[in-house]
Image (tube, rainbow, N blue to C red; front, side):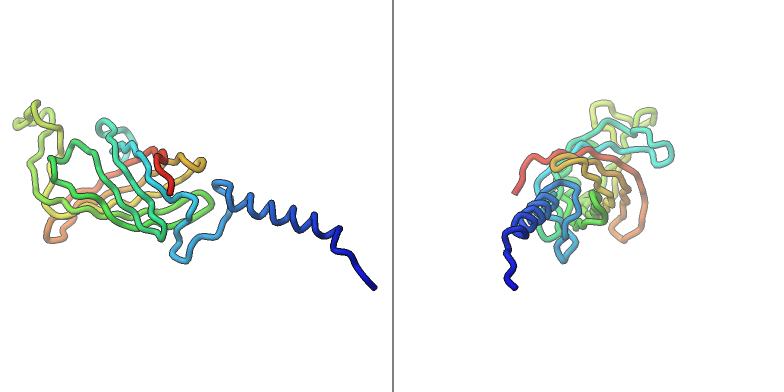
Length: 187
């Protein structure tokens, strides 16, 4: 008995087309790389960060800009723009990212705090209005842990925490932040 492949060909092409559409549609289930990264979100993002009160969620100052790059292979690099740090005080961040859900990803970064500065806060006796408002920082490092959620191929939000450590590894401050991301460069 001879069978023809003609009726099966359109079904195979349709199935192949649906599979490719699923791989190329943002947010669709797609296999991640072995390292947990996802090629659909690789690129450089303009980020607007808002530091927040961890209890109330209220902004704890004006937003600031940063650049974040999600590299293929699951690494991340970040350039901060926060005016709370003195020029050259905080180094660029480095870390990892990985896919955790359909449109969600985790990111972990660390950045050196090269030198310490005193606090400069309104309402305190030492406040100097000619200097940036800052809670003050100790030399050491900062860690940032966020969950990223993408709404489409180029936009997302993130929320998470940050921790500050002195040079001996003692935690001296924790905080919360949110961010809005927009991809500005794709690979």
